[in-house]
Image (tube, rainbow, N blue to C red; front, side, top):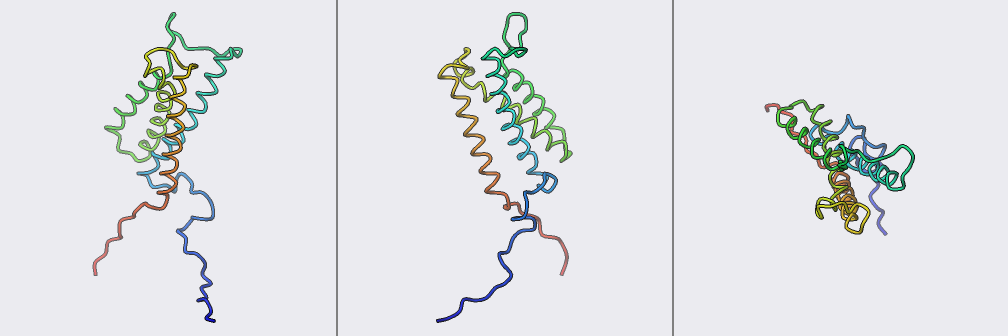
Length: 165
């Protein structure tokens, strides 16, 4: 019987992996905006579902935003926010600011995606069967985007350090 090779070093891990989750500052600047967009989308979507449920059950002090007698759906605020993020993102070059634009982008997307059913039907179907399209769409986006971010965690390539020979 042959003995298995003895390697006492243990598994080779990237620095920081296996010990604790990375801090946002440890995420590459090009990826930080994507992480913040995912967080913003996920948290805003959850908050919107809570807020609209409170409005639906007529909780004290919680109500719709109106302009006169017209109900302003939250997809309007999402469209305006995405317009701002897109315009500002065309000229902004600071990695720090662009990362925070990712957060605003995720929030704007949640404001729109949550009301997908209303946009498809062009009427208020939020609490009807067609309103579930927004919930399903958001959950799929949260799951797929989160999975991609998790699976590609260590896939970032660092350029080789220069140096002559």
